[in-house]
Image 1 (cartoon, rainbow, N blue to C red):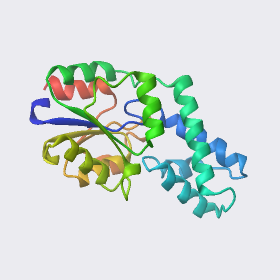
Image 2 (image 1 turned 135 degrees about the horizontal axis):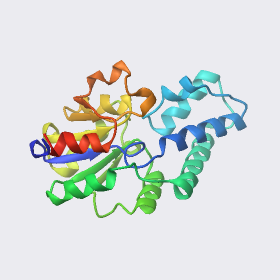
Image 3 (image 1 turned 120 degrees about the vertical axis):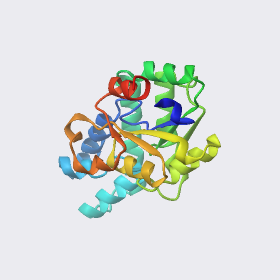
Image 4 (image 1 turned 90 degrees about the vertical axis):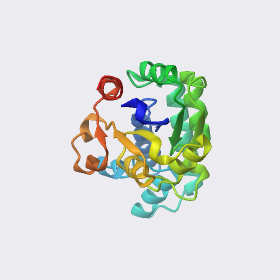
Length: 219
């Protein structure tokens, strides 16, 4: 099936690196420090959004005015960067898939909701420069995921029609963004969300990179 596509675009957090738990830990810690106890559902509904959008949503929900949203974003981002450098690991099976796609000469890109500072930390930690033709951040767009802007920007950078781009995503917001960009989307949700009915919008749903590899190369 891989030969049906001219590019593969990866989300980053939760797909390239095991950073989704880092974001959740950082959100719990930073908001607890300012007197707000977040529940699981408060965090889950914001997965896949830009840091600025997450903070804005939570501040509105809990009427937080101090510290500023800019300061909360700064603290969150630094917490995540520190965790990436200390504990970040690639998602199991990623390296094999990257090497297989690269061997076919198919360009790969990253389209992420994370900031450039987070992207740099991930690339430094995992040594990814040799694999990706371009990287796009939703921080450079007016709207983040689930808006398709970051994926459409990526297809323009690649100079490839969105219809021939394959997206690999883990969050519902990311899946919606990829589908809205008219791309084919493989969802790889974390285990606790794997059977969530909203993922039905994805073209395919896989539990890990081994299943994705079988889907792309063995069928």
